[in-house]
Image (cartoon, rainbow, N blue to C red; front, side, top):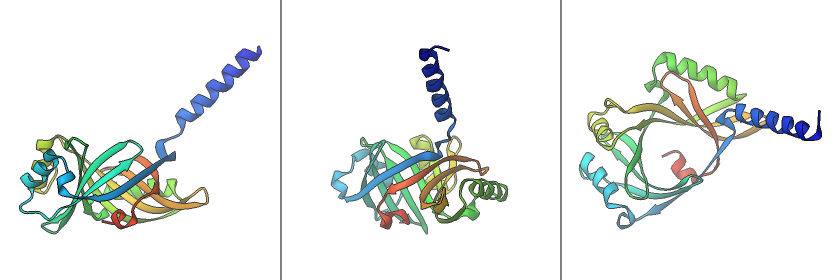
Length: 196
């Protein structure tokens, strides 16, 4: 084996190993800060006023590793909503504060099994229903209080967990059937908004 092929095999092996690691090693950084409604894109303001009657909205700017966004947080008809928009005001997703019991029983069981494999111990701090879809489908979902046709429903969990002898906060995104889509360690986040 030549020296050149030896290094190529090491690089290939390392690349294969890195690609085999699930997305659970990712870190999530977010910084949220309060903004006034006059700093919010008109399209975002229009979306919120179209689906909520006279809402009291708290607007936030958000910086993350993937870019900047605008978020509307409000309580309406007994439910807490968090609606994320891009910088132009296009809706990205809708999250609704919920409990794990909103998930089907078989999904809960599978999720608990998957979390048990991922963490040595954990405690769920916050659960949200996570809707992603077109603007019209998301509006219909909010008005109808259930996911409309074409809206992808997932669950987002913030949990305090231990793994590799390290305790931290993590954001876990899961399918309705309990399959884990991603696990990201929360690096820095405004804790007041973490539990909103």
